[in-house]
Image (cartoon, rainbow, N blue to C red; front, side, top):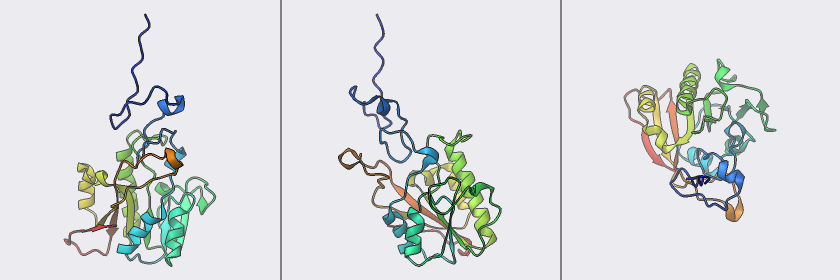
Length: 225
């Protein structure tokens, strides 16, 4: 007698119905939202405008801003609408900004820029080539971004999962950096809209903000957006 295959279990413990489409039954969990759909190439999910606006309500950015993972310009457009000069680049071509720019290979910030603001493209699944452990890749992204902003005594704002902050290695890296604020988002982010098929968002996110002009020894501010 043939064995009955086990019913798939979703990351949150729910059983996936047997009637679910084959594509949904084989799809990997999305790092920030379990959608039942295959992951976007290079973890591209546009950031809703209210998320960037939550940052700008609390942080006054200095100088032109570099958005190095600009995607289709969702975040850059909000920054520009609030009066900031923005340099937009991305490793992929999404029809916005300058494509083909690998942030991790950049040795300096674009001329004149004093701030970096972005939603780093690292989730849980290791979807990038060579990215076997995305938490490690994310810490590498943070280290590189801090090195670049230190050159201009600038600012860095990264959108991350709230739970990411609690990691031991992350805590060590952030404690050694000019960590100036964490802005906890009180609404959960919905990364795309599938009308009535849209699932509830599963994770809380926060902005972590670093400022190389932050007074040494002064603790970071805890804010809500």
